[in-house]
Length: 214
Image 1: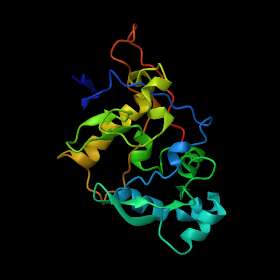
Image 2 (image 1 turned 180 degrees about the vertical axis):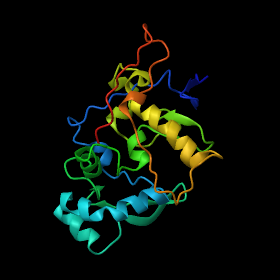
Image 3 (image 1 turned 135 degrees about the horizontal axis):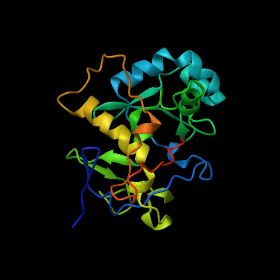
Image 4 (image 1 turned 180 degrees about the horizontal axis):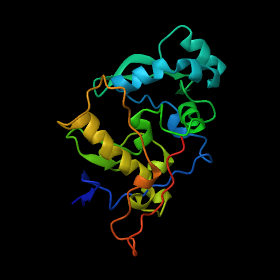
């Protein structure tokens, strides 16, 4: 039976059993290859309004693509459009996530990044339950080595502090009856001080976990 854990008020069904460690840049940013994350309406608006700053950071082939096409496609996930892929990589990938590096240069690394990219490998299943994506869980089909729990001894509870903090905001914004209207210009923001600590970390001090870098 899958053990469930309550973190930041959210039920994460396999948190205690999951193992995960982000090793970027050693992996080359492989989770940006054929990712096609869905993007919320307000995230699309934010990206569209910032394209003059984003475009110069993109690969030439991505710049060419966007001169003729929008950054989203007709493919949909969760009823939302998905980001385009150019030559196998996310349209916003250029040796790493350009949305991440642009935001970081302005003091907020997640200012432009879709929440599904920020929260990875945390996701919601068809019943709305949060879980850690792992091989062997929810028929996970993406063959990323970092989703193989045998690849790391590190408990996801200890390595996904920032991601767990952000999904609490995601839940309130997009999935609860208190959700902020999509037309709002107030996007998700993350303060490193909000990192979620493990339930049993000895002295009670928050564990500072590395954020996803891509």
